[in-house]
Length: 503
Image (cartoon, rainbow, N blue to C red; front, side, top):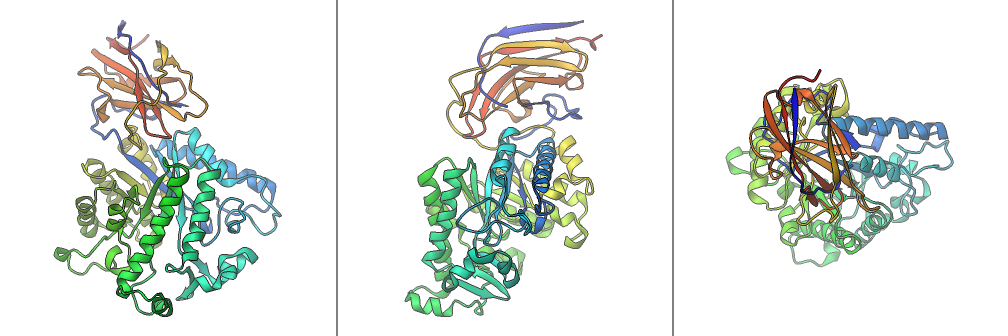
Protein backbone atom coordinates (compact mmCIF):
# COMPACT_ATOMS: atom_id res chain seq x y z
CA UNK A 1 0.00 0.00 0.00
CA UNK A 2 1.19 3.51 -0.83
CA UNK A 3 -0.20 6.87 0.18
CA UNK A 4 0.14 10.13 -1.76
CA UNK A 5 -0.02 13.36 0.19
CA UNK A 6 -0.09 16.84 -1.32
CA UNK A 7 1.27 19.22 1.29
CA UNK A 8 0.91 22.72 -0.15
CA UNK A 9 0.33 24.44 -3.45
CA UNK A 10 3.26 26.63 -4.45
CA UNK A 11 4.80 27.34 -7.91
CA UNK A 12 7.60 26.31 -10.37
CA UNK A 13 9.74 27.55 -13.32
CA UNK A 14 10.99 26.21 -16.72
CA UNK A 15 13.21 23.33 -17.99
CA UNK A 16 13.31 20.98 -21.12
CA UNK A 17 13.22 16.72 -22.32
CA UNK A 18 12.64 13.90 -19.83
CA UNK A 19 15.31 11.87 -18.12
CA UNK A 20 15.61 10.79 -14.53
CA UNK A 21 18.98 11.08 -12.88
CA UNK A 22 20.23 8.39 -15.25
CA UNK A 23 18.58 5.23 -16.49
CA UNK A 24 20.80 3.06 -14.31
CA UNK A 25 21.05 5.45 -11.37
CA UNK A 26 20.49 3.78 -8.02
CA UNK A 27 21.42 6.62 -5.68
CA UNK A 28 18.55 7.65 -3.44
CA UNK A 29 17.75 11.20 -2.34
CA UNK A 30 20.12 12.68 0.27
CA UNK A 31 22.66 9.88 -0.35
CA UNK A 32 25.12 11.93 -2.42
CA UNK A 33 26.55 15.30 -1.46
CA UNK A 34 27.07 17.43 -4.57
CA UNK A 35 27.34 21.05 -5.51
CA UNK A 36 24.20 22.58 -6.96
CA UNK A 37 26.21 24.61 -9.47
CA UNK A 38 29.06 22.88 -11.27
CA UNK A 39 30.26 23.20 -14.85
CA UNK A 40 30.74 19.74 -16.37
CA UNK A 41 32.25 20.49 -19.75
CA UNK A 42 34.12 18.87 -22.59
CA UNK A 43 36.33 20.32 -25.28
CA UNK A 44 34.81 18.85 -28.44
CA UNK A 45 37.66 18.94 -30.95
CA UNK A 46 36.96 19.34 -34.66
CA UNK A 47 40.45 19.91 -36.09
CA UNK A 48 42.04 16.89 -37.79
CA UNK A 49 38.69 15.07 -37.27
CA UNK A 50 39.75 14.13 -33.73
CA UNK A 51 36.35 14.09 -31.97
CA UNK A 52 33.81 15.19 -34.56
CA UNK A 53 33.29 14.80 -37.43
CA UNK A 54 35.25 11.64 -37.96
CA UNK A 55 35.80 12.51 -41.60
CA UNK A 56 35.07 15.46 -43.90
CA UNK A 57 31.93 15.46 -46.02
CA UNK A 58 32.54 14.69 -49.69
CA UNK A 59 28.84 14.23 -50.52
CA UNK A 60 25.47 15.31 -49.15
CA UNK A 61 25.14 11.79 -47.77
CA UNK A 62 28.30 12.44 -45.78
CA UNK A 63 26.75 15.66 -44.43
CA UNK A 64 23.79 13.68 -43.11
CA UNK A 65 26.20 11.22 -41.54
CA UNK A 66 28.01 14.09 -39.80
CA UNK A 67 24.74 15.27 -38.30
CA UNK A 68 23.75 11.79 -37.10
CA UNK A 69 27.22 11.28 -35.68
CA UNK A 70 27.09 14.52 -33.69
CA UNK A 71 23.59 13.84 -32.37
CA UNK A 72 24.67 10.41 -31.10
CA UNK A 73 27.83 11.95 -29.60
CA UNK A 74 25.80 14.57 -27.73
CA UNK A 75 23.36 11.92 -26.49
CA UNK A 76 26.21 10.13 -24.78
CA UNK A 77 27.59 13.36 -23.35
CA UNK A 78 24.14 14.17 -21.96
CA UNK A 79 23.79 10.69 -20.47
CA UNK A 80 27.23 11.08 -18.88
CA UNK A 81 26.06 14.23 -17.09
CA UNK A 82 27.86 16.81 -19.23
CA UNK A 83 26.12 20.20 -19.16
CA UNK A 84 28.49 22.37 -21.23
CA UNK A 85 30.22 21.87 -24.59
CA UNK A 86 33.27 23.85 -25.68
CA UNK A 87 32.91 23.30 -29.42
CA UNK A 88 35.99 24.01 -31.51
CA UNK A 89 34.76 26.57 -34.02
CA UNK A 90 38.14 27.88 -35.18
CA UNK A 91 41.07 25.53 -35.70
CA UNK A 92 44.03 27.03 -37.59
CA UNK A 93 42.66 30.09 -39.32
CA UNK A 94 39.59 28.18 -40.49
CA UNK A 95 35.99 27.94 -39.29
CA UNK A 96 33.46 25.11 -39.03
CA UNK A 97 30.69 27.27 -40.48
CA UNK A 98 30.34 29.09 -43.83
CA UNK A 99 31.87 32.56 -43.56
CA UNK A 100 33.45 35.23 -45.74
CA UNK A 101 35.99 35.97 -42.99
CA UNK A 102 37.91 32.70 -43.10
CA UNK A 103 37.69 29.47 -45.12
CA UNK A 104 35.70 26.44 -44.05
CA UNK A 105 37.62 23.84 -42.06
CA UNK A 106 38.91 20.91 -44.15
CA UNK A 107 37.77 18.69 -41.28
CA UNK A 108 34.18 19.63 -42.15
CA UNK A 109 34.07 19.94 -45.94
CA UNK A 110 36.07 17.71 -48.25
CA UNK A 111 37.55 18.99 -51.48
CA UNK A 112 35.04 17.06 -53.63
CA UNK A 113 31.99 18.75 -52.09
CA UNK A 114 31.30 22.08 -53.87
CA UNK A 115 29.53 23.64 -50.87
CA UNK A 116 27.83 22.64 -47.64
CA UNK A 117 24.06 22.25 -47.66
CA UNK A 118 23.87 22.74 -43.88
CA UNK A 119 25.50 24.95 -41.27
CA UNK A 120 27.49 22.67 -38.92
CA UNK A 121 27.69 25.29 -36.16
CA UNK A 122 23.98 26.05 -36.17
CA UNK A 123 23.21 22.34 -36.18
CA UNK A 124 25.57 21.74 -33.24
CA UNK A 125 24.12 24.63 -31.24
CA UNK A 126 20.54 23.48 -31.84
CA UNK A 127 21.40 19.91 -30.85
CA UNK A 128 23.17 21.04 -27.66
CA UNK A 129 20.28 23.27 -26.71
CA UNK A 130 17.77 20.46 -27.29
CA UNK A 131 19.62 18.56 -24.56
CA UNK A 132 19.76 21.49 -22.16
CA UNK A 133 23.49 21.96 -22.70
CA UNK A 134 25.24 25.29 -22.94
CA UNK A 135 27.58 25.61 -25.91
CA UNK A 136 30.64 27.85 -26.13
CA UNK A 137 32.48 28.70 -29.34
CA UNK A 138 36.04 27.52 -28.71
CA UNK A 139 38.53 29.54 -30.75
CA UNK A 140 42.20 28.71 -31.27
CA UNK A 141 43.28 32.34 -31.45
CA UNK A 142 46.84 32.83 -32.76
CA UNK A 143 48.15 29.64 -34.47
CA UNK A 144 47.50 29.40 -38.21
CA UNK A 145 49.09 26.04 -38.98
CA UNK A 146 51.95 24.76 -41.09
CA UNK A 147 52.63 25.84 -44.66
CA UNK A 148 51.01 22.66 -45.94
CA UNK A 149 47.91 23.26 -43.79
CA UNK A 150 47.64 26.86 -44.97
CA UNK A 151 47.83 25.60 -48.56
CA UNK A 152 44.72 23.45 -48.05
CA UNK A 153 42.73 26.57 -47.08
CA UNK A 154 43.04 28.16 -50.51
CA UNK A 155 43.04 31.80 -51.50
CA UNK A 156 41.08 33.03 -48.46
CA UNK A 157 43.71 31.87 -45.97
CA UNK A 158 44.66 34.62 -43.52
CA UNK A 159 48.40 34.10 -44.10
CA UNK A 160 48.03 34.61 -47.85
CA UNK A 161 46.02 37.80 -47.50
CA UNK A 162 47.85 39.28 -44.50
CA UNK A 163 51.50 38.16 -44.71
CA UNK A 164 52.75 41.36 -43.00
CA UNK A 165 50.67 40.52 -39.92
CA UNK A 166 51.90 36.93 -39.58
CA UNK A 167 55.04 35.40 -38.13
CA UNK A 168 56.56 31.98 -38.81
CA UNK A 169 58.10 30.07 -35.94
CA UNK A 170 59.47 26.50 -35.98
CA UNK A 171 57.59 25.68 -39.18
CA UNK A 172 54.22 27.06 -38.00
CA UNK A 173 52.44 30.30 -38.87
CA UNK A 174 51.03 32.61 -36.18
CA UNK A 175 49.03 35.80 -36.16
CA UNK A 176 51.35 38.55 -34.91
CA UNK A 177 50.20 39.24 -31.32
CA UNK A 178 51.48 42.83 -31.54
CA UNK A 179 49.51 43.70 -34.68
CA UNK A 180 46.35 45.77 -34.55
CA UNK A 181 45.19 43.78 -37.56
CA UNK A 182 45.21 40.63 -35.38
CA UNK A 183 42.81 42.21 -32.88
CA UNK A 184 40.64 43.59 -35.67
CA UNK A 185 40.38 40.21 -37.36
CA UNK A 186 39.57 38.29 -34.20
CA UNK A 187 36.98 40.88 -33.22
CA UNK A 188 35.38 40.41 -36.63
CA UNK A 189 35.05 36.66 -35.99
CA UNK A 190 33.50 36.99 -32.53
CA UNK A 191 31.17 39.71 -33.80
CA UNK A 192 29.90 37.33 -36.47
CA UNK A 193 29.47 34.57 -33.90
CA UNK A 194 27.61 36.79 -31.44
CA UNK A 195 25.34 38.25 -34.12
CA UNK A 196 24.51 35.12 -36.11
CA UNK A 197 24.55 32.28 -33.59
CA UNK A 198 22.88 31.50 -30.25
CA UNK A 199 26.17 30.68 -28.55
CA UNK A 200 26.37 30.82 -24.75
CA UNK A 201 30.05 31.57 -24.57
CA UNK A 202 33.32 32.28 -26.35
CA UNK A 203 36.33 30.27 -25.20
CA UNK A 204 39.82 31.51 -26.07
CA UNK A 205 42.52 28.89 -26.55
CA UNK A 206 46.19 29.44 -27.34
CA UNK A 207 45.86 33.07 -26.32
CA UNK A 208 49.61 33.21 -25.76
CA UNK A 209 53.04 33.24 -27.36
CA UNK A 210 54.38 29.86 -28.49
CA UNK A 211 57.56 30.36 -26.52
CA UNK A 212 59.44 32.69 -24.19
CA UNK A 213 62.61 32.24 -26.20
CA UNK A 214 64.25 35.13 -27.94
CA UNK A 215 64.17 33.27 -31.24
CA UNK A 216 60.46 34.01 -31.71
CA UNK A 217 60.70 36.40 -34.70
CA UNK A 218 59.25 39.56 -33.16
CA UNK A 219 62.49 41.47 -32.64
CA UNK A 220 61.75 43.92 -35.44
CA UNK A 221 58.14 44.53 -34.45
CA UNK A 222 59.26 45.15 -30.86
CA UNK A 223 61.86 47.64 -32.04
CA UNK A 224 59.37 49.40 -34.32
CA UNK A 225 56.81 49.65 -31.49
CA UNK A 226 59.02 52.08 -29.58
CA UNK A 227 57.72 50.60 -26.36
CA UNK A 228 59.51 51.44 -23.13
CA UNK A 229 58.38 48.13 -21.66
CA UNK A 230 60.76 45.20 -21.47
CA UNK A 231 60.17 42.66 -24.21
CA UNK A 232 58.53 40.27 -21.73
CA UNK A 233 56.14 42.95 -20.45
CA UNK A 234 55.47 44.13 -24.00
CA UNK A 235 54.47 40.61 -24.99
CA UNK A 236 52.12 40.36 -21.99
CA UNK A 237 50.59 43.69 -22.93
CA UNK A 238 49.98 42.44 -26.47
CA UNK A 239 48.08 39.40 -25.22
CA UNK A 240 46.16 41.55 -22.74
CA UNK A 241 45.04 43.83 -25.57
CA UNK A 242 43.76 40.90 -27.62
CA UNK A 243 41.76 39.51 -24.69
CA UNK A 244 40.37 42.94 -23.90
CA UNK A 245 39.45 43.62 -27.53
CA UNK A 246 37.60 40.32 -27.91
CA UNK A 247 35.81 40.73 -24.58
CA UNK A 248 34.62 44.24 -25.37
CA UNK A 249 33.39 43.22 -28.82
CA UNK A 250 31.37 40.29 -27.49
CA UNK A 251 29.83 42.24 -24.61
CA UNK A 252 28.89 45.15 -26.88
CA UNK A 253 26.62 42.81 -28.84
CA UNK A 254 25.37 40.31 -26.25
CA UNK A 255 26.44 40.98 -22.66
CA UNK A 256 25.12 37.60 -21.49
CA UNK A 257 27.71 35.67 -23.54
CA UNK A 258 30.41 34.29 -21.24
CA UNK A 259 34.00 34.96 -22.30
CA UNK A 260 36.51 32.50 -20.91
CA UNK A 261 40.05 31.37 -21.67
CA UNK A 262 42.13 28.24 -21.20
CA UNK A 263 45.64 29.26 -20.08
CA UNK A 264 48.48 26.86 -19.37
CA UNK A 265 47.79 24.72 -16.31
CA UNK A 266 50.70 26.08 -14.29
CA UNK A 267 49.93 29.72 -13.65
CA UNK A 268 53.26 30.79 -12.17
CA UNK A 269 56.38 29.37 -10.62
CA UNK A 270 55.79 28.00 -7.13
CA UNK A 271 59.00 28.02 -5.10
CA UNK A 272 58.08 25.02 -2.94
CA UNK A 273 57.73 22.85 -6.07
CA UNK A 274 61.08 23.71 -7.60
CA UNK A 275 61.45 23.45 -11.38
CA UNK A 276 58.04 22.74 -12.94
CA UNK A 277 58.59 23.59 -16.61
CA UNK A 278 56.55 26.08 -18.58
CA UNK A 279 54.19 28.41 -16.75
CA UNK A 280 51.55 30.74 -18.15
CA UNK A 281 52.96 33.91 -16.65
CA UNK A 282 56.72 33.48 -17.00
CA UNK A 283 56.97 31.27 -20.10
CA UNK A 284 54.29 32.26 -22.62
CA UNK A 285 53.30 35.75 -21.44
CA UNK A 286 49.76 34.97 -20.32
CA UNK A 287 48.69 37.29 -17.52
CA UNK A 288 45.17 36.17 -16.55
CA UNK A 289 45.36 38.04 -13.27
CA UNK A 290 45.56 41.26 -15.26
CA UNK A 291 42.52 40.15 -17.30
CA UNK A 292 40.70 39.68 -14.01
CA UNK A 293 41.80 43.07 -12.66
CA UNK A 294 40.53 44.74 -15.83
CA UNK A 295 37.29 42.67 -15.68
CA UNK A 296 37.92 41.34 -19.18
CA UNK A 297 37.33 37.67 -18.45
CA UNK A 298 34.35 35.78 -17.01
CA UNK A 299 35.92 32.38 -16.31
CA UNK A 300 39.24 30.54 -16.60
CA UNK A 301 39.74 26.91 -17.58
CA UNK A 302 43.44 26.18 -16.95
CA UNK A 303 44.70 23.05 -18.69
CA UNK A 304 45.83 20.97 -15.71
CA UNK A 305 46.78 17.82 -17.58
CA UNK A 306 49.22 16.60 -14.93
CA UNK A 307 49.45 13.82 -12.37
CA UNK A 308 49.16 14.40 -8.65
CA UNK A 309 52.61 15.95 -8.05
CA UNK A 310 51.66 18.99 -10.13
CA UNK A 311 47.89 18.71 -10.41
CA UNK A 312 46.84 19.27 -6.81
CA UNK A 313 49.27 22.10 -5.95
CA UNK A 314 48.35 24.06 -9.08
CA UNK A 315 44.61 23.65 -8.52
CA UNK A 316 45.25 25.22 -5.13
CA UNK A 317 47.34 27.98 -6.65
CA UNK A 318 44.66 28.96 -9.18
CA UNK A 319 41.86 28.95 -6.63
CA UNK A 320 43.89 30.88 -4.04
CA UNK A 321 45.01 33.62 -6.44
CA UNK A 322 41.89 34.20 -8.53
CA UNK A 323 38.38 35.38 -7.77
CA UNK A 324 37.33 34.54 -11.32
CA UNK A 325 35.54 31.15 -11.55
CA UNK A 326 38.07 28.36 -12.10
CA UNK A 327 36.95 25.45 -14.26
CA UNK A 328 39.65 22.80 -13.94
CA UNK A 329 40.84 21.34 -17.24
CA UNK A 330 41.25 17.56 -16.90
CA UNK A 331 43.38 15.52 -19.31
CA UNK A 332 41.07 12.65 -20.25
CA UNK A 333 43.17 12.30 -23.43
CA UNK A 334 45.97 11.06 -21.17
CA UNK A 335 44.11 7.74 -20.99
CA UNK A 336 45.30 6.98 -24.53
CA UNK A 337 48.41 4.87 -24.93
CA UNK A 338 50.28 7.46 -26.97
CA UNK A 339 49.40 10.31 -24.61
CA UNK A 340 50.53 8.97 -21.22
CA UNK A 341 48.56 5.74 -20.86
CA UNK A 342 47.14 6.91 -17.52
CA UNK A 343 45.11 4.55 -15.41
CA UNK A 344 41.44 5.44 -15.14
CA UNK A 345 41.76 5.84 -11.37
CA UNK A 346 44.06 8.82 -11.89
CA UNK A 347 41.38 10.77 -13.77
CA UNK A 348 38.59 9.66 -11.42
CA UNK A 349 40.56 10.85 -8.38
CA UNK A 350 40.95 14.26 -10.00
CA UNK A 351 37.22 14.44 -10.75
CA UNK A 352 36.40 13.67 -7.10
CA UNK A 353 38.91 16.24 -5.89
CA UNK A 354 37.39 18.99 -8.02
CA UNK A 355 33.86 18.03 -6.97
CA UNK A 356 34.80 18.30 -3.30
CA UNK A 357 36.82 21.49 -3.67
CA UNK A 358 34.92 24.48 -2.31
CA UNK A 359 36.57 27.06 -4.57
CA UNK A 360 36.35 25.40 -7.99
CA UNK A 361 33.44 26.07 -10.34
CA UNK A 362 33.61 22.79 -12.22
CA UNK A 363 35.72 20.85 -14.67
CA UNK A 364 36.27 20.39 -18.40
CA UNK A 365 37.59 17.24 -20.09
CA UNK A 366 40.05 17.33 -22.95
CA UNK A 367 39.03 15.58 -25.08
CA UNK A 368 35.34 14.73 -25.47
CA UNK A 369 36.09 11.49 -27.32
CA UNK A 370 37.62 9.85 -24.25
CA UNK A 371 34.52 10.74 -22.26
CA UNK A 372 32.07 8.99 -24.60
CA UNK A 373 34.28 6.13 -25.78
CA UNK A 374 33.58 2.67 -24.29
CA UNK A 375 37.33 1.94 -24.47
CA UNK A 376 38.45 3.77 -21.35
CA UNK A 377 35.64 3.21 -18.83
CA UNK A 378 35.27 6.93 -18.05
CA UNK A 379 31.79 7.18 -19.56
CA UNK A 380 30.33 4.50 -17.28
CA UNK A 381 31.98 5.96 -14.18
CA UNK A 382 30.58 9.42 -14.87
CA UNK A 383 27.11 8.23 -15.87
CA UNK A 384 26.58 5.70 -13.09
CA UNK A 385 28.56 7.21 -10.24
CA UNK A 386 30.36 10.55 -10.26
CA UNK A 387 27.84 12.47 -12.37
CA UNK A 388 24.77 10.43 -11.45
CA UNK A 389 23.30 13.58 -9.95
CA UNK A 390 22.74 16.56 -12.24
CA UNK A 391 24.21 20.00 -11.60
CA UNK A 392 23.41 23.42 -13.03
CA UNK A 393 26.17 25.08 -15.08
CA UNK A 394 25.43 28.71 -14.34
CA UNK A 395 24.09 30.72 -11.42
CA UNK A 396 22.37 34.08 -11.74
CA UNK A 397 20.25 36.17 -9.44
CA UNK A 398 16.59 36.69 -10.25
CA UNK A 399 13.68 34.58 -11.39
CA UNK A 400 13.74 32.56 -14.58
CA UNK A 401 10.12 33.43 -15.28
CA UNK A 402 7.00 34.85 -13.70
CA UNK A 403 5.10 31.87 -15.07
CA UNK A 404 5.18 28.71 -12.97
CA UNK A 405 4.33 25.08 -13.67
CA UNK A 406 0.80 24.13 -12.75
CA UNK A 407 -1.44 21.06 -12.61
CA UNK A 408 1.32 18.92 -11.13
CA UNK A 409 0.23 15.28 -11.16
CA UNK A 410 1.76 12.25 -9.50
CA UNK A 411 0.98 8.72 -10.67
CA UNK A 412 2.30 5.35 -9.62
CA UNK A 413 3.48 3.21 -12.51
CA UNK A 414 5.09 -0.19 -12.75
CA UNK A 415 8.62 1.20 -13.10
CA UNK A 416 8.40 4.18 -10.79
CA UNK A 417 6.72 7.39 -9.80
CA UNK A 418 5.56 9.47 -12.76
CA UNK A 419 5.50 13.25 -12.35
CA UNK A 420 3.95 15.63 -14.86
CA UNK A 421 3.13 19.31 -14.93
CA UNK A 422 1.99 22.08 -17.24
CA UNK A 423 4.20 24.99 -18.20
CA UNK A 424 3.92 27.45 -21.06
CA UNK A 425 7.45 28.44 -22.03
CA UNK A 426 7.90 31.54 -24.13
CA UNK A 427 9.64 31.24 -27.46
CA UNK A 428 12.89 32.77 -26.33
CA UNK A 429 13.18 30.61 -23.23
CA UNK A 430 15.58 27.68 -23.14
CA UNK A 431 14.42 25.92 -20.05
CA UNK A 432 15.03 22.73 -18.16
CA UNK A 433 13.03 21.33 -15.27
CA UNK A 434 14.86 20.33 -12.09
CA UNK A 435 13.38 17.87 -9.61
CA UNK A 436 14.32 18.23 -5.96
CA UNK A 437 13.65 15.37 -3.54
CA UNK A 438 14.42 14.74 0.14
CA UNK A 439 13.78 11.70 2.33
CA UNK A 440 14.78 12.97 5.76
CA UNK A 441 13.76 16.62 5.85
CA UNK A 442 11.71 19.18 3.99
CA UNK A 443 13.06 19.55 0.48
CA UNK A 444 15.57 22.38 0.12
CA UNK A 445 16.29 23.73 -3.37
CA UNK A 446 19.52 25.36 -2.18
CA UNK A 447 21.10 21.96 -1.53
CA UNK A 448 22.73 20.05 -4.37
CA UNK A 449 22.07 16.78 -2.54
CA UNK A 450 18.33 17.32 -3.02
CA UNK A 451 18.65 17.78 -6.80
CA UNK A 452 17.98 14.29 -8.13
CA UNK A 453 16.87 14.69 -11.74
CA UNK A 454 16.57 17.00 -14.71
CA UNK A 455 13.97 16.89 -17.44
CA UNK A 456 13.79 18.53 -20.84
CA UNK A 457 10.04 17.93 -21.10
CA UNK A 458 7.22 18.45 -18.65
CA UNK A 459 7.26 14.91 -17.28
CA UNK A 460 9.65 12.48 -15.68
CA UNK A 461 9.73 8.98 -14.25
CA UNK A 462 11.61 8.50 -10.97
CA UNK A 463 12.50 4.79 -10.68
CA UNK A 464 11.29 2.93 -7.58
CA UNK A 465 14.90 2.12 -6.69
CA UNK A 466 15.41 5.82 -6.03
CA UNK A 467 12.50 5.97 -3.61
CA UNK A 468 13.27 4.16 -0.35
CA UNK A 469 10.52 2.06 1.23
CA UNK A 470 8.91 3.04 4.53
CA UNK A 471 9.87 6.69 4.22
CA UNK A 472 8.22 9.97 3.47
CA UNK A 473 9.73 11.90 0.58
CA UNK A 474 9.09 15.55 -0.13
CA UNK A 475 9.71 17.06 -3.52
CA UNK A 476 9.28 20.12 -5.69
CA UNK A 477 10.12 21.22 -9.21
CA UNK A 478 11.86 24.29 -10.57
CA UNK A 479 12.28 25.88 -13.96
CA UNK A 480 15.88 26.67 -14.86
CA UNK A 481 16.70 29.00 -17.74
CA UNK A 482 19.75 27.47 -19.42
CA UNK A 483 20.41 30.71 -21.31
CA UNK A 484 20.82 33.02 -18.32
CA UNK A 485 21.16 30.74 -15.26
CA UNK A 486 18.03 32.00 -13.50
CA UNK A 487 15.71 29.63 -11.65
CA UNK A 488 12.11 29.80 -10.49
CA UNK A 489 10.94 27.32 -7.89
CA UNK A 490 7.43 25.92 -7.75
CA UNK A 491 5.13 27.02 -4.99
CA UNK A 492 3.94 23.44 -4.75
CA UNK A 493 5.67 21.03 -2.44
CA UNK A 494 4.45 17.47 -2.42
CA UNK A 495 4.97 14.51 -0.16
CA UNK A 496 4.75 10.81 -0.96
CA UNK A 497 4.90 7.89 1.45
CA UNK A 498 5.92 4.51 0.10
CA UNK A 499 5.17 1.53 2.30
CA UNK A 500 5.72 -1.33 -0.15
CA UNK A 501 6.60 -2.13 -3.74
CA UNK A 502 3.77 -1.42 -6.17
CA UNK A 503 1.78 -4.46 -7.25
